[in-house]
Amino acid sequence: MTPFTLACDWTMDDDAAVQKAFRTTARKLRLKVADIRGIVTSMEPRSAWAEGSDGRLQFRKGADGPS
Image (cartoon, rainbow, N blue to C red; front, side, top):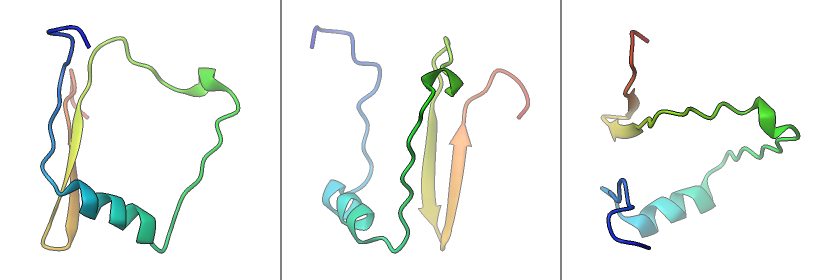
């Protein structure tokens, strides 16, 4: 990787625990996308994150306007 090309490299959790959660979950979703033009690809950078606390999962995202 060339210098100064990384936008974000941020972790908050134990990677091994996250991988184990994905491997051992009771429900899994598999999705096959047949038409890639049906996927939204924003030209502007967007970010989002999720955080679990007190048995709840909260999602946050940035936006240009009300959402």
